[in-house]
Length: 121
Image (cartoon, rainbow, N blue to C red; front, side, top):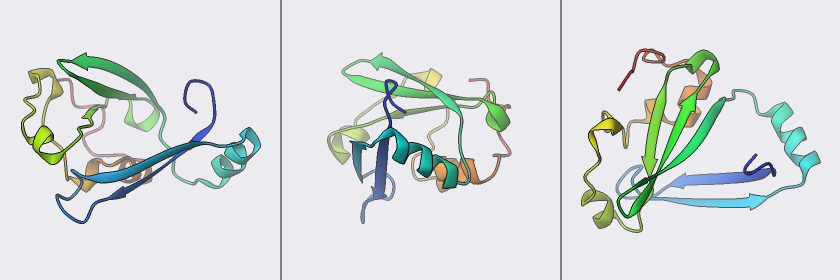
């Protein structure tokens, strides 16, 4: 759900610059389709999402609950690899995790992460 409406997001990683470049497509879906997909989705995440301005960019901050309570992840999307490489994150972002598949939503949903609930930065 996004802004109270059901939608689907499909993400693929690019061939180069592993996990730094990907195609992301979002589209609205009917509510009944959402509920049918949700029933068969298997592993799930529960989180609140916040948008935070960071200079010329917007950081998306995910605050997890449930088995991952206490975990916070930050993501910033860029128009190019060069723009991403030139970005200097503020200290509150914590450790850089780009390219570490263990921190992907898919991996986190499949199993609670050993670091969940321990990060406080």
